[in-house]
Image (cartoon, rainbow, N blue to C red; front, top):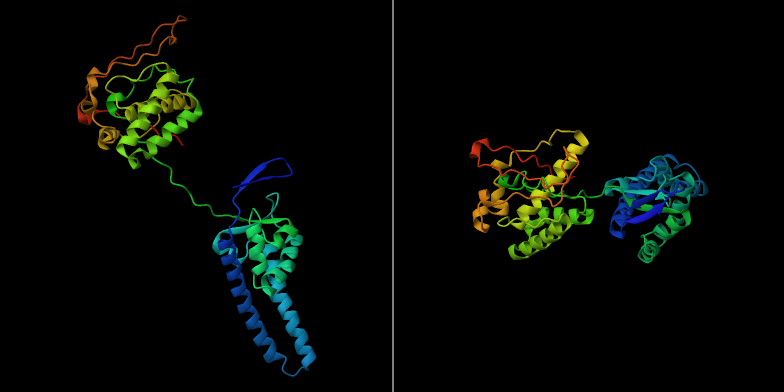
Length: 320
């Protein structure tokens, strides 16, 4: 990414185009221009056969200048930096400040391009692109332009599996105000990629993140709760609080995790130690009661076992 600062002091992050994509775009433009040039030349030769040699030479030079020099300049000016080859490769020519291309920029690029691309077969342009930090050729340097990638691959957003239903609501008393955003980001990245990690490595990472999260919240991880399930449940609680703060008392909608088998993702409670009914509720030390002005621990009642078909949804929505 290349950070450009506009005249209004706005920083823009642009991705400069690399040499292979730019070379392919130039090749497509040259093929199209040469096809038009050959067609126009054939028409002129057949229609000006009665003229003398000097007139035919002048028409040939004019055709070369108009088709191979003037046409690319006009196309880049009218399309704001998107020629046929650049449109096919997802590129665009912009100014150094990120603004749209003007006629003077396209004119300088086109005139210098005749020397560094047509007359030297692209050797000078390749050398200049290799030397430049942002892959600019001489025409871009003198015109004050930059070729950027207009189409950027979209990265797939990882899905955070919901916590097991037996952990729903058990961390409502935690104080999450001291947890920094960097730790939330690390927890979410782990949850989205934990199935791609080695089991032992993933378990150690989950334990380390759970320890850091418990240290920030002031409440230890309950016995018998897998660290990955603990992380997912705390993230769910944070998401629920954000939703209540944004939308009032309504809870976010999410698919029912009972049919998705979250226990298979984090492991059944019996495998890791205590059953679900033996996991004590989490109490935030020194949490303040909303109804009274004093400070007393807020106890969360234990959840009773519910049949499989009657289990409610967790209300967990993966953060954007």
